[in-house]
Structure formats: structure tokens, C-alpha cells
Length: 252
Length: 333
Ligand SMILES: Nc1ncnc2c1ncn2[C@@H]1O[C@H](COP(=O)(O)OP(=O)(O)OP(=O)(O)O)[C@@H](O)[C@H]1O
Ligand SMILES: [Mg+2]
Image (cartoon, rainbow over all chains, first blue to last red):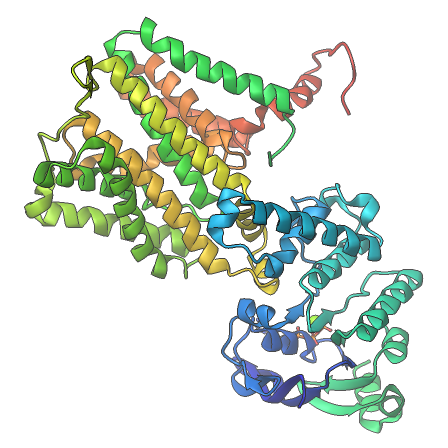
């Protein structure tokens, strides 16, 4: 059974069909790429898959269960976590506090316990702080942990966004152009982290414009054009696909 | 402590100074100013509880009516069932929290301006109930002859009339400190961090699995609770309440306190209300000019300290530099 299945997924904005009967089936453990020209509907697919938009038609299945009507919070709880195309973070908070907030799903203490700061709460808080340090170390942000997140350079802000998504220990991680604005060295570092996460068991759905990164990182790739899925296959197959070449060359 | 700049010793010293002033002042001022200080303390609870709601981004116009819910609850419970002052404080809080829970269900689905207007409508609906239903709310004239705080007796040893000025004042100090402590603790806990995150970026919070609506509701209901406690205090002090007291004019004052003080830090709104109450007393003689003066203060604050008075300590070095006042000693970065 597929981990995530998008079945006949459609989203209309007035007359515009942003996503048009898209079928995608992502298996556990793969890195799935999602590519397509600007405005082809990739971010909209992410918004549909994570519950930020309600589809006009079609369904979203998580391990065979229909989750089409679940809120983003509920889907996050199931393990579906996304990042945003525009770097999103809690700008006024410190870097480490961003990650600590992002560990919310692993805060198994009730509101009363949080308010009373019970011994259990303090233990959980310590565990979360240690985890946050680990993640920051992995992402190379440990040195700036006490800086205000909004003051970081743009590239680091994007890395922090991914660190926060990781903090919630997703089963499926949807990354919307994570390498945008990064130099080739940073991009390669990010891609190696993505591959390492895959090897640890995280499934990934990756929108990315950097073709070299996509081709070398993804196991399979889905190609969209004008909201429709026009091709799917291994990077090698997709690169040879006539419809794909047409879409990219035709789109400029 | 979350927030900023002011280092811990300064914060601590200023808190101790503030408490000292509140302990000494009642003995040197006359009965009139004592009454002003009692109202100030009750209003401190109101504005601090209001901040719980602004923490998640909503500027509720239903907050003063919720204070009224606590007041009416205390008044009715004491008149009809003889419930004591002590029990009425938590009960007033719970009643207001209950009403807050009922109105927050539709309200929290609204955002920004819609929330503003929606909360106004909800508050007016509450006030309409008081005006419309003479029984039990007494209609436009409200309720009179509400019992006071009673007296404190220790088995024939001594008896203290809590309704006279100084004892009631210290009673209010006690209740206010307990309320402030609880609210500060809430803001300082993990819950406060989550609320702050929701305020900064609610979609990001959702994407990380934070149940945003649940937390908004929590803040709204907790704010309602403390508003209700303040209302119960008010009813037992004023001994009469009416719908007009909890009307839009009072709401405007609440907004003024919060905007002038700033809502980023816990101390902000408190600073606002203390400053404005002090100014209000100084200019009391020019009664017809008071709204104008408040308007001017609001404009000056919005223009020069958009973050409110709370941002003042952090800005002093900057302002000194800007206006060319030489600053000797160690340079600040
Ligand atoms: N909330 C919305 N309301 C109206 N139209 C929208 C909305 N979101 C997206 N669209 C439209 O849907 C189409 C697909 O947008 P989408 O953002 O999904 O594209 P994309 O593939 O992510 O593009 P890019 O590569 O530029 O990020 C675009 O024409 C866009 O203008
Ligand atoms: Mg996009």
C-alpha cells in the first residue's frame, strides 16, 4: 500500500484549474521529486496534500485511509509535515526556540502539566532541548542557536525551516524548493542530508528547480504542466520523455 | 523571562520598587485616591487578562462585557444565594470563562478585522441580555445593594471590616498579585511560547501540528476567567453595577491602556494603565478636556513609540544619541 496517494486530485481557483485530476502514489522510503514549470501547480499539490487547501475533487489517502478532510494539524500528527516555499519561521524567536516549538508533536504533557511545570514537563523540556541541539548540529546551525531567527541570512533561514520540519520527526516530509537561493555547495550539502534522512526511513516529496540536484537525489519524479501530471518515472526515464522536454522547452 | 533588553536585576528592582509604592501609598493618600488605587488594581487584572488574548493576535472588543459577566455573576449569586465574596471571585471567573467559551467557538473562526467586529457584536449581545431581561439582571438600571466583602473574624479574638478602605485595598492587592502571578506563569510556560508562535505565524504553527484553534480558545477562555474575577471584585466594591459600565467607552479605555503600554511584554499593558491612571488624576480638573488629552497621548505614543511605553527602556540610548545628548561611560552596541 502506498504511503501517500493522491487520487484524481483537482483544485480550481475560479476558472483556473491549478491542479487537474492528478494521480500520484508515493511509496514508503522513496524520495519523490515533483517538477514542472512555474505556475504548474506544485505548491498547490503540497497545500492539498497537507490540508491547507480543500480539493475541488479527488481524494488524499494516507496509508490507505482517506484524510481529505483532515486539518493540517491533524495530518501533521499523522506524520505529514511540509515546509513552505517562502521561508517560514518564527522570526522574533531565537533559532533554538524555533526548533523547540517545532517539537510540539513530541510534547506529551497536558496543558495542566505545562502550566504547573511538573517534573515530567521539565524532563520532557530537557529532552526536547537536547533534541533541538542535535538537529541544529546536523543542519550546521548550532553556532547561531541563540540568534534571533529573523536576523539570519536567507540561506540559513531556509535551512532552519527544514530543521523545524525534521524536529517533528515526519514520516513524509514535503519540501517546497528547499534549495532556492542556495549556492551549489549548500545545495549539495542539503541533498546529502535529504539522502541521509531517506536512508534513516523518512519518505520525501521534493519540489525543486535545480535539475542537477533533483536528478541526482530523487528515486522517482513526477512532472506537472498546467496542473496535469504529464510524466512519471526514474530520473533517467523522465529526462528522455518527449512530453517533458516539450513542457520545459515550450515553457521557455 | 521572554521579551527583551531589560536585564534581570533591573526588572527585579523595578518590580520591588513598584510593590513598595503600592504598599506605602495607601497610608499617605486620602480616601478618594485610595479608591482610585483600588480601581487601578482591579483594572490591572483586566488589562493583564486582555493581553492573554492579544498574545494570539486578536483584539477582542468583548473583553469588558466579560468583566461584566463576572460582576453580574457575583452580584446575583450574593443577592439570591448569599454566596460570599471569597467564593464569588472564582465563581465570577468561571462564569465569564464559560461565556467566553461559548462565544469563542464562532469568534475564533474569524481573523483580523472580522474578529474585531465579531467580538464587538458578541459583547453587545451580552450587554443586550442585561438590558433586555429585567429579571434577573435589572435592566438598564442594573443591580444595587450588592453585599461587600464582609468581615474577617478570628473566633472572638478580633474582627476586621474588610469593606473599609485600607483592608479592602490590601485585599485587592492580594487578589491582583495572585491573578498576575498565575497569568505571568501561563505566559512564561511552554503554553506561552506556543501562543507566541501562533501569533507570529499561525500557518507555520499548524504545519508543525500545533492545534491553533484550541490554543486560541485556551487563551480566550483564560483571559475571560481573569476578566470575570476582576468583575466580581468590582461588583463587591462598587455595590451597584449597570450595563453602561461595561459599554464601549470602557472598552476604549482598555484599548488605550494596551496600546499606550504595548502588548509585547507582560509589563507593557500594566505600564500603560498605571501611567494613564496617574495622568488621568492629574488632569481631572479639566474634565471636559480629558478625552482630547487622551487622544493626544494616544497619537504621540503611536507616532513616537509604536511598540508602546514598554519599548522605552530599550530605546533610551537610541533616543539620547539621536538628539545628540552625549553619553559618557561605556559605549553600548
Ligand atoms: N490561493 C490561490 N488563489 C488563486 N490562485 C492560486 C492560488 N494558489 C495558486 N494559484 C494559482 O494556481 C497556479 C499554480 O500555482 P502554484 O503556486 O501551485 O504553482 P507552482 O508550480 O508552485 O509554481 P512555482 O514554481 O512558481 O512555485 C498558478 O497559476 C497560481 O497563480
Ligand atoms: Mg511553488
